[in-house]
Length: 640
Image (cartoon, rainbow, N blue to C red):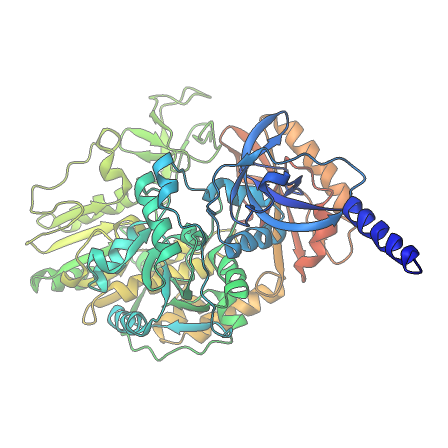
């Protein structure tokens, strides 16, 4: 009986432990939650305790209704001071998400100051009853290799890139994902690599539901496979992802900018690599300035013969056609040699704005407030797609005299037809599909969209839209009508974007094609860098500019945005929030400004731009930003 007190004490401790501790699950709902709320805790019914697994879908009670959510964690906690609800049940005992996916969603939610529920909401596959039967009872992740540092492949031409990619695919011993900027790049890359449809699995948001689920199964079952997809492909349930190749790493399409969550591929890939230990390979012929700076890149040797034509000299000679004497002579020589020409123009329409000569009134879009572009007998807004007939008189003063400013593609087309009346001239921009807008008739040649087969030597005149619509093998001359228009914008990344687009054009042009760049600024560091085949001139000069004005990659930018149908209310709310945050230490906040087009989708938008060296300094401030504000980490545009 001597041990009786000890036995009673032990029993008492066990009873108390049972009373104090309970098993709970953290569930990330598939419903959108406020940004500071990612997961909700629920108790586990006794009947389900042995069946619960991370990755399963549970039915939960939320805001007086029921919804589904992903079980992200199972843990034992001390009894809470507040009551917890029980999960209502399991949608199915088979897991749908991997632990790596759920960790990734939580990490991204912290980084982008949003709720992990957004990632569940957008990435939960739509399943029907028979789909559940095809899922495995477990999703077994294969152990990864030790973590490796990211590498960069700076290629010079398409053939060089193809060989490198095929070599990586051949050596691949697991799952390999190539992330491309746009959906049409999936089939284009597969064609370049000469892959059959059975050699790779395409992934993008527009896949039909059955096809999307089939790919979900491939990612979660086949340990060796090749995937080519857009940015959303990073969120699939890969079990053995060894390598991620980010193709055209510099592209703006690698960022989701128009809706939450506003993530970018490079950050998602880094977070995934930290979780799954996979290798990251960045790839481009014109790296982003951030990659050049962070990875301390050295450029390969380029050998291109590029001619510049100074447009200032043309104006002195009273040549206002924007076809310089040098370009005119080369067009004639190229047509005589039975080769075709591609002339690149940055602007759509006939002009960049139209105003009344009598009172100065400028025609603007009522939705966006940006200048309307004259296209044939109509005005078009290229931001929101609005179209309206051009009125015969000014709506302000009733004057009949209108004046168009700027150089649009249709004006260049008209000049070309005067200079080369016998030539086969084809304009390629988005307006060619809007025949009711442009009254534009395609020439009666063998030219067909999208294959673009033709026999006659042709002058193609196009915007960026045209780049994947023509057969570059037949091009003997590439002409840039006005290179300056590419970077003469107020956005801080305009020069970088212009440089990357020009390099893309030069890369697409055949090796023996002549290249002429027309510019008013032949001494600009961007033009010098291209003409001298020395990328470091551009990158070092642009870094100096960014450092001077404290822009990335020397600092971090965060864009806070507020929208409302009332301009006064939007401005007042922006100023109120600015007053709350302007004195935060280690954060430089610019006073709120309206966006360039003032309105977006019928709402007035004001932005507050933050600059900070360390993104961790944003945590405290983010807690006071109201939930109806947008937070954009690493924005590419500050005036939109």
